[in-house]
Amino acid sequence: MLNKNDGYFGEYGGRYVPEMLIPALEELEKAFYAASSDPYFAEELHTLFSAYNNRPTPLSFAKNLTDELKGARIFLKLENLNHTGAHKINNALGQALLARRLGKRTLIAETGAGQHGVAVATAAAKLGLKAKIFMGQQDMERQYPNVFLMKTLGADVVSVPIGQATLKEAVNAALKDWIQTLDDAHYLIGSAVGPHPYPAIVKYFQSVIGREAIKQLQKHRISYPDFAVACVGGGSNAIGLFSAFISDHRIRLIGVEAGGKGSKPGDHARRFSSNGSPGIAQGYHSLFLQSEEGQLLPTHSISAGLDYAGVSPEIAYLYKNKRVEMTSATDQEALSAYNTLARLEGIIPALESAHALAWVIKNAPKMNSDKVLLVNISGRGDKDIFITACYSDPMQWKAFLKRQWKGHHE
Ligand SMILES: *Cc1c(COP(=O)(O)O)cnc(C)c1O
Image (cartoon, rainbow, N blue to C red; front, side, top):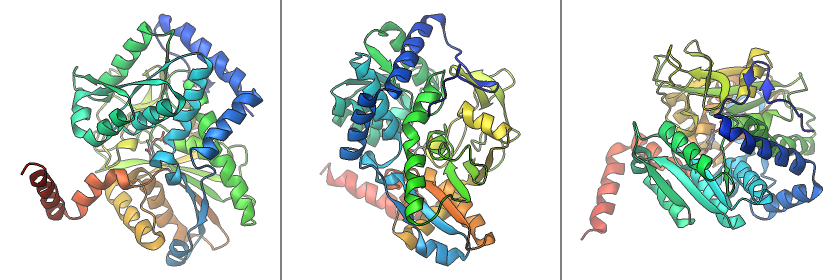
């Protein structure tokens, strides 16, 4: 059931935007609540999810990993098997449907590493909408493969050459463009962040993860898991998984954020550490890594998806109320978990998801075999090959890139 509210989760959440955006957000909110109680919309979404997006994604008992760790039984929710390889597409397709229902013909989005941009470009292509993706010039250079994919999918990728030319500037450029095109464009936010109603909308479309998982566990004669574990960037895959369990206090909810290289400011993205503090940025009130003046601070993670200074206001609220426990995994721990899952289960996880696995690998051995651990594999690791291959054997990888370069220029 959808919980209609004013967009606040305790003190967090809300809608802190320029006055001229309020009517558009109100229109979106109205359309969203209408759609979420319209059986026709549910049917459309369900058809897209099942016939296009490969849902339900499997729930898999990780027998080899469980045997190796000799503790709790580990179940993997395989969001890596979504079309395009991660959970982001659940939300992109859902919001694209909503946009079409509102009569909008263009999807506007910003993207940092390009994962969200690819999901939006995909949804736009499928639903016959235009995609306009804003990206910092610096990010475009670093993330050329995703820029290429977005363009292949027919999206218009707009380079933002301002300031540091990364995500922050792209957000501002996208908002500016949206203000000028409100009648025709939907602004598609990619995680459970931003002004109300976005956190509620993103949770709604991602909650399919938790709903499916609960049903799939029942097929294993498990009525509830003891732990549900997910990585937390903006928080969308985590809130999607947790949504099915929040009201059932027998289940411990574990969020894992990026511990990065260490605990120095700038070396991690641990908003729930002593470096994080409450504040307002990008249209919402939540915990942020920010300076005393409220400027968002640089963050670091080996995984682009966890490399973000803000976090879902609902997760901040659930943490404050001790419903969600937050922890972190370092770059090293994530890489090690990535390798372990590949070798033992034949699944190469996204580096983001590997953070959640790192917690599992550390904690499962301390638990009895009657305990059940449910972990969300939010995405697949193919996208990370430029990082993982270079990390594990830099000489080989660089030699390969050189050969490629020569091959195309002789
Ligand atoms: C983007 C991304 C994340 C982080 O985003 P959330 O909104 O926190 O889920 C996690 N895993 C993968 C694979 C991603 O692409």
